[in-house]
Image 1 (cartoon, rainbow, N blue to C red):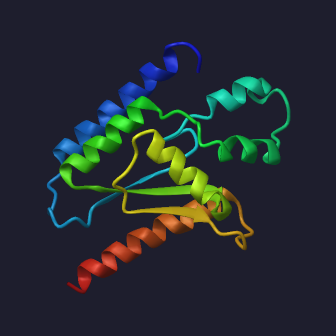
Image 2 (cartoon, helix red, strand yellow):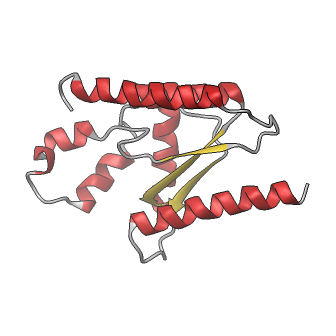
Length: 155
């Protein structure tokens, strides 16, 4: 993460994603979406982990929430490049995160501070949701797909 390997790997993956986008035949109706996560996808929490032993100490939810409230996580540059590419071709990004709804203001503020805007929606885990972040994100990603498919059928 601190050397150049991660950035090179990220560039390679994003280059492939952009090649894929360039190969698409888009309907141009604004219904195409691309789902992004927040932590370690759009925003890097490396500054937090660097000060907390890179995982050598047990994860502390309260400490991470304090960090997230600062809305200071830097953008992952390659992801930002992909995000901008999507907007330029009319694909609407959807931000889907396992962060809790109570973190909405800080999360949206952080994304905007890092140049992310123009998304279709930002979906955060409701306080009453008892499952894991993976379960929440999987269910929400499927629901986004169903809603878009449903809208297409009724137009």
